[in-house]
Image (cartoon, rainbow, N blue to C red; front, side, top):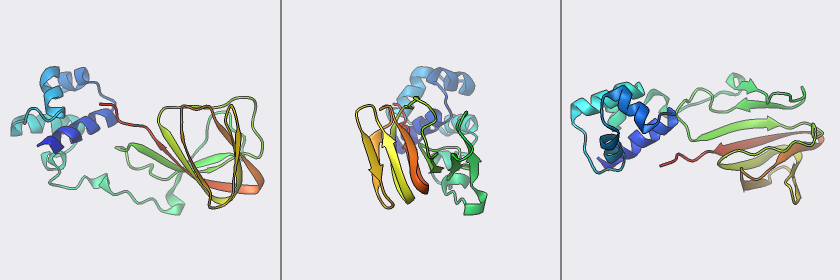
Length: 184
């Protein structure tokens, strides 16, 4: 049942719930839920039912006996959801590669960076970032260096490092995967 504890922890974090919030929603104590998540307590079926209800799952899905409908998410090219960072120029855009999957630790998307840096701003966020250049050439700027990547090149970095990206030449397409770790 340690797998149930890890799954409960993952689901709680993905739903953005604190232990206190899950305790209030489930009617269980924070201490007991902590023990379940660490694999120190095995919940009864009635407790598993309560937890499943809090996560919007069946007990079978919570226990891993049934596949969660969105456990496998396919996004066809024409179904990608576009999104843009506020203040981005029209030639900079992003398309979500897993928009329909709500429980995820990674955020994959296609980026088409602008040709010029918008201003002096650089960006940072929690987690790690991986970029793979699908088409064209891009330049990443970090506080102490610039890195030029050609088609087929990749880069992996700690996303808390200040960074920004621009396209060099006729246009570029980059697969970006941002991973934000689930805190324990």
